[in-house]
Amino acid sequence: LLSGSFFDISSAVITALIGVFAIDIAIAGYLNKEVSMAARIPLVIGGIMMVIPSMLVSIIGLAIIAVALVLDNRLYKGSSGNEIPSVS
Image (spheres, rainbow, N blue to C red):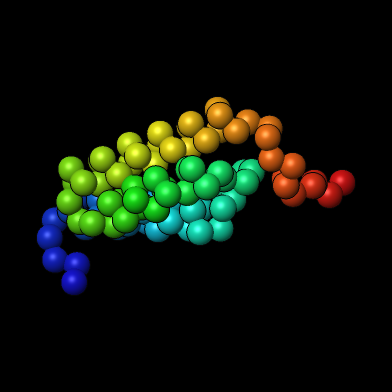
């Protein structure tokens, strides 16, 4: 299961964790604020690509995730009224 060099194993584990986290954000629809449906689809696609154990595919998946989160943050900044209120 974990055969290979330290770099191969650690990069596979880290990219898989990032991919699962991106899929989780897409399913939950929430990171720091509500994530738009337009950003959820690329998050799932990028997350699945991050889980595939290929460095090239993982880099492309990471780029898709980053673009989706940045564009969602810029395009839908402050448009959601569903933020969790802070308790003081």
